Image (cartoon, rainbow, N blue to C red; front, side, top):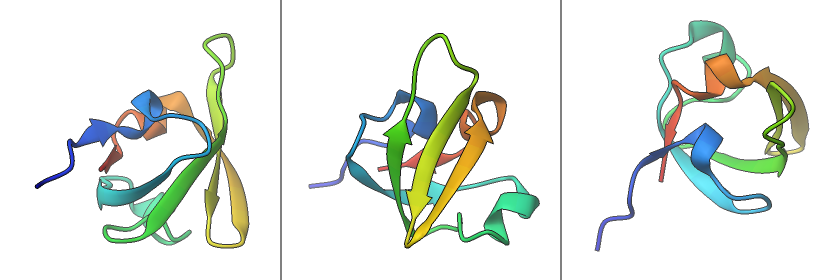
Amino acid sequence: MDKKKIILTEGDLNTEYTITHNPHQKYIALGLFSGNTIKIITKSKYNRNLVVAVGDSRYIISKNITDGIMVC
């Protein structure tokens, strides 16, 4: 059974997702590439950023960027 693909911004806190698509070359270099695991650490509808974990690294990424990253 295939998992439903969603944009990263719609993901749940503390849930691991697999990246399926990332159009942003800058963030691919940081480890946000297809097949890698990502987890949302912090998100708020009042804040324009997400804090995500990729491996042992943590990144603050604008929701404008995370709206283009697909995960399942």
